[in-house]
Length: 254
Ligand SMILES: [Zn+2]
Image (cartoon, rainbow, N blue to C red):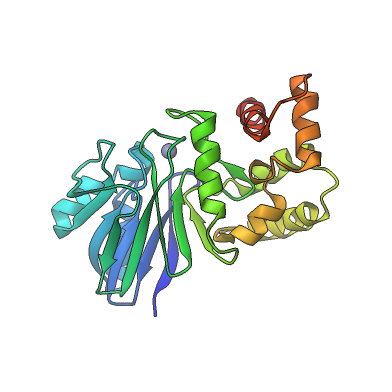
């Protein structure tokens, strides 16, 4: 039976640790110290690091952890990842027999040019692509790429548990409410998120079913979202990608 727990890092990062109380793998260790503390405290043996993209707050702990534990470091083939031993691309499978767990790699470019996500046993580790009630900023890719990456993610089962790397949910719900003020599911979700955060609890994982009902970036074909984007752009946007792009630009300056 595998467990997935957050290790808090920096202001709002989650380093996810997947373990079976004996062996462990970690996703996106931006810093080594809290990971080392966690695995020593829980008497775990670290076997691998999985990286989604090259940003320092996701890879900054790689070298220290690999020097200490001599582990495999998986990451996107198209990016420069510190200490990477195994470069991955769409369709590759990471086999972790010690857990046991197999993770399939999805190319999810947009936030960075080579960003990948990992999916297996109903869990998705999507780095900075999809956030609860939001999505990653477009730093290296295009709006079209990010839109396609999010579309690809939404083809996974609705009950997929989504493990994103930042706790941005509460501020995302404020923006989403401005876009989609009459969505009762969003209002309900925001109340739940406020309560969790007031108690210092993570809002992650979320599920794709929840995200499809409340996340404006996954709802660019819904009339409420189209109308809000058109109002903001002061024009009739021609398609869902233009709506998505307008929302992303709006959020960048929100
Ligand atoms: Zn990033």
